[in-house]
Length: 170
Image (cartoon, rainbow, N blue to C red; front, side, top):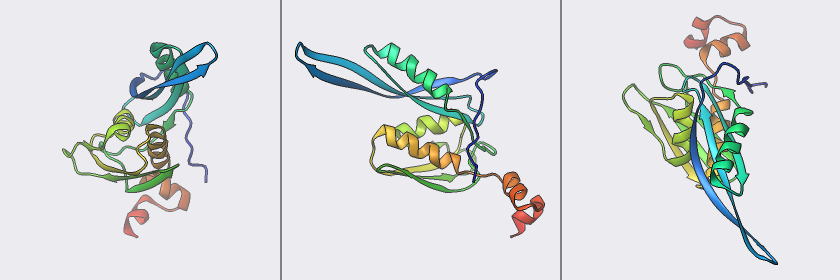
């Protein structure tokens, strides 16, 4: 199934969110060398989101490299009335995520790395739970996998070759 929906970055107003910064130390003969890795999520808050990882010897350079990497990994997600179309479970590494739609006014009930991804994609109301590993790398990737697997009613009707009313009846 080709559910991967790649997007070009031209004419998009993308906002970036920093998820995590990690300081890494390399011990050499001359002493310790410090470098930084940054996980960044970019999105237009209207159904398009991407994540990236940047590594550099300075924090600002690592963040800008992460933003450039995130712009290369954009996907389109169906957001209907500020929430997701249906429940979804996904896994990446040791991180399990569960995302569920919520009624209007609920807000984004999610923690840390999941919140950054869901707010960047433009979800206003949803319930989310992260189980297993809390490693931000794996949580972001598991959340992106869950969002990739979401399907709206129009695409389901199109795949089945039936009308939209038949999808809702049964």
